[in-house]
Length: 310
Image 1 (cartoon, helix red, strand yellow):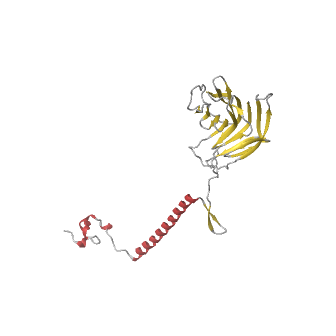
Image 2 (spheres, one colour):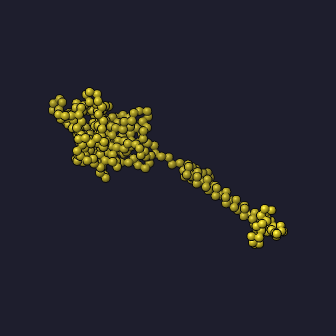
Image 3 (cartoon, rainbow, N blue to C red):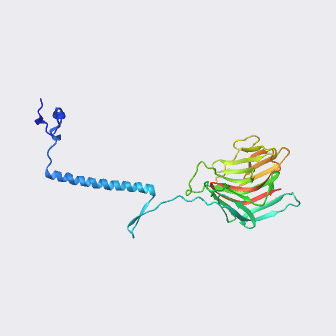
């Protein structure tokens, strides 16, 4: 039987284990000097805990609100927040470009015109994006969905010129690029540059889409009111060419051509003089539309726009 005197400091229920505890591990009464050392060490540990907690709080604050700098003159902390860049403003109105034009020899004949995007008198209606003329180019920055309550139309239209779908060719030097790291990316948004024969209910467009390639798309109504919608990525009927990737570096020439034949309007689209899509559109005969240049969630530039048609 083990007596209680052989296990000092153990609670009543643990007396049976006293013979397993080495003598060196059994508690002893601390001296006054060791009590002072322990008290001092607790204070040091408490101080280190406070400093560590403040440091952790400081890192959290920096992560949440941005870098913190110290204003030496005032002796105060100053919080510096790094905000994302504002989206490019939406331009609604007109820019006026220089124009070279060859009028048809007779009414209803073929006209030829060329815009160099220097200051001039030819009206270009611009929408949904920041459109400017710089060094003979029409440049656009367009991002996001903010249009100040207006319909999103990320395009520029040649304002007073209308052409027939029976005889139309437009070509332009185009370049498309990312907006840059200062603008937020929306991976689900559309990204393209565009050359188009367009008006409210008629569209035939050649799209340049980064990381995808060239696309031909169309939407129009036939004389009996039927809507025809499609694009070269989904509708391969009568498309005889493979689609083409964008060159690694621009600018590149994009051309859109419409010609009436006995069955409808034959549409052809070219990249650097190589055809990437061809489509016969039945019921597009005798439609009238404008020339449009588009830019969506990209930085785009356009130069040397040339148009020929009725």
